[in-house]
Length: 202
Image (cartoon, rainbow, N blue to C red; front, top):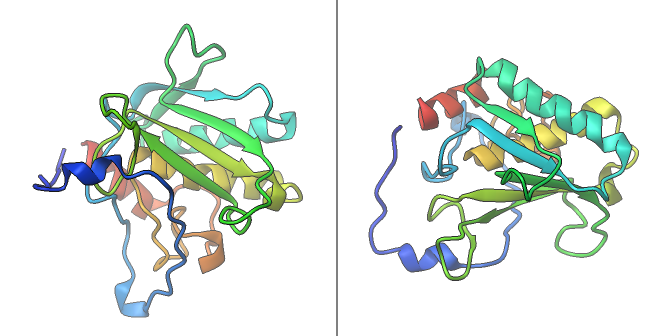
């Protein structure tokens, strides 16, 4: 695992709040992947668990499961998350919920991911500054309710990429980590996304 040691910024680890940014890339900036300053999910991405909230509509469950299976297939089982139905029995590293978020700042986002580290007093963290223990993935039904199952799957796969440590890669529409608003044209992880996972966890 390749990680940078960031000195003097531990205090920034407890910054709360989420920033959603749209980037306008130039052709010269095209990249295979972008990381969260090499920060990762503590414990890795193999043999982990995810939980779908009971309030999530059934139409979203299959795309969620398919997106996570796509990551497993694309990475040759390096990413392997099993669904748990009871978070009291098995602690999930990702909780996924589909809910309407019609108000600013989330009304323009198909989804967003929040990061947490229970070892820190204020446990909501910024992934650019430290590792995390689990995430909450929010799918915004306000925007995606009329999407096809395949497009919903793409939204889930993108947000799960954040759970694994990949940042938005708006320079490359041929990666799952490109945002929809920047022209993403795929609905499952591509070679560039897999290269990012291999860089972080192999």
